[in-house]
Length: 288
Image (cartoon, rainbow, N blue to C red; front, side, top):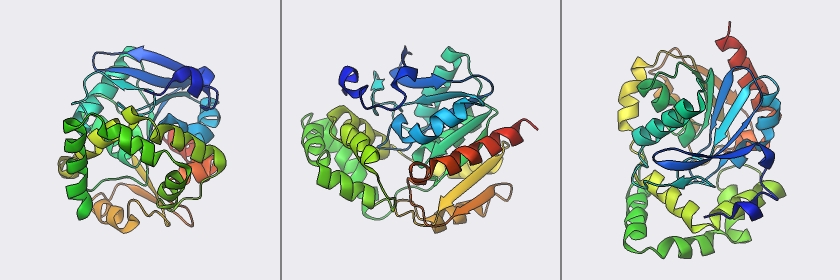
């Protein structure tokens, strides 16, 4: 597990961090601001540091709630098997209940966007959703075989995440992984991802999540979505093909689509002011 006493020296907005116990998780969540609640859900392999550039701006107009997902960052999963899309949505709903929060807007990135949609479909969270480069289709090709195999390796060999973390936490590997997203990384961004990728628990949590990330059910249920949905797609996204997401959205005529030129999968980290403004626009529309 990441050592908080060491991590807090570089973790963005550390003063806003809280640790909250629920039945299934010990959550690391950052909370700041007052007003309508905005929930931020990061993607697989990340942590709430990915919202560092939006967090302060959003907190001037809203109560911002930004958790590390189960098994990611500083959130400890007491029940590691609860890594599927529906169970994660259920556990986030339990966290919101404990906080007494009913978000007016959920901003989700990649897998976090799929999680946001599962949350509003399955639970009484009547929030608008802003989905950034959403991962709405199951893995295909080699990834469909690789992720379950890596998860089985983790289950059979408890030392596997340590070996993977040792490899993935090097400067060279982190740089290659971030480059593969199509986004440009600065030094702070690289240092935060290196901190996460070098932690065996974070690696194990990411693999469990991705191996259980079955999205066909979400695809079938999207046609009953009643809450407003805005989708932003980075033209340079190399992790989730924009064309794939556009095909999913073709069956959702009520969704609003925003195309973003030149930015990649981690576009909200490349241009945080732009996406903070977009989130505030969505929040204002939700209150009209």
